[in-house]
Image 1: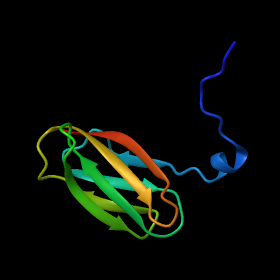
Image 2: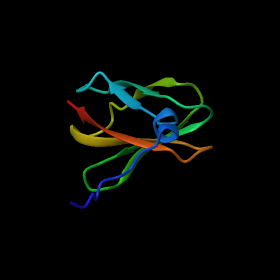
Image 3: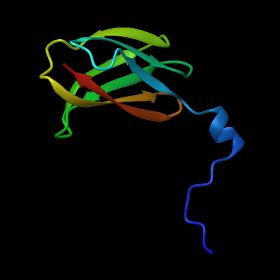
Image 4: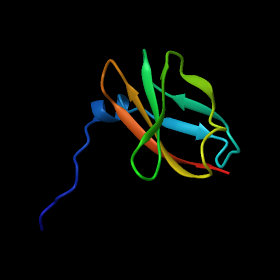
Length: 94
């Protein structure tokens, strides 16, 4: 039997970042929360792969007004700038 998965070590687990966007779905106001020290880059990406919103976040959370976006599904990507660790989640605009 051959194992083809990804091996994750304890350090990878301890340094993992977690991105959350809520409420989901939302009519426009969304709270973005991401673990990790230092500045983070938050990107909202439409289903065609275009970055439609890009903001830098210093704290672990921030309120974003996404009311100008067209209703539909978006990918929210967060990256800790110091380490490059990235997490993604989906968010639905009503």
